[in-house]
Amino acid sequence: MRSAWTSSSFVFSALVLGALSVPSVASAGDLVRGVRGKLSAGDLASGEAAVERYRAETGVDKEYLEAVGWLARGAEMLGRREKAAAWVAELRREIPAEKDDLTIALGAAIEVEGRLRVASEGRGSAIRFLEKELAAAKDPAFRSRISKNLNLLGLEGQKAPEIGAQETLGRKTRLSDLAGKPVLLFFWANWCGDCKAESPKLARLNARYGPKGLAMLAPTRFYGEVDGKAVDAATEKDAVAKVWAETYPGLPGVPVPIDTETMVRYGASATPTYALVDRKGVVRLYAPTRLSEAELSR
Image (tube, rainbow, N blue to C red; front, top):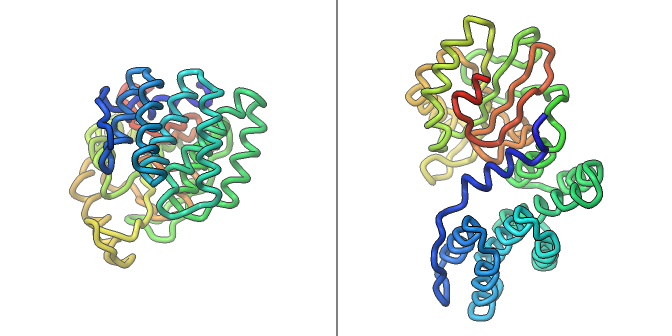
């Protein structure tokens, strides 16, 4: 099994931008982009200086707290654990409870604290901490993020959670219906550009390994909107069906369960997310990120 945080580290590396200069007073979005750029170059000190300057000139707001979340991530990944813990402590002071517009920053604090606990107290302590946070969380995306971190610590090698289906496109199929077959789970969202980019390789994998027994499921969930407009479930289901038919033509007959709790349980806060289940129903791969065709084939 890979290191518990390998996939998460990959996600971080893939998301950070090139190094950017940070203006004296950052406009909306500039501070976070600038801090991410500095961290991508391993320059934690410049990122911290930009955040401290922003607070002195602008105060504590959503932009500031999200930038602090990136500092906490960056400090932990660079091995500066005391720095990471200090930024986590600030986030927990400023965000004592879940708030709709601050779940990204709070999620960063929880994620980094989990990693710090692994390093200082072991995996069991981190799992207990994350389970407690998950039990208190409400927003589906926020809960999914916590579940992702739990799954990175222990889902591989465990029995795969069952797939629910409040709604479905195609034949209603559960993992238990596919017992004896390896199953590739592709968690996606209808608006996700990175997911759409996976379509050609998934089609090739399906053509190559489907005849040898590989089954595929493509779970998703309702997000409550289409093209930025709030819609009801029936309208969104039509939109999901349209995107699936037009964007994934190489996956005919692959069932698409639509179920929020399934997405939460598998930690699909980042789309795409992959899981590979073996013939005995055990998770052998969990990757909350894009994977190359070679990695998936292997």
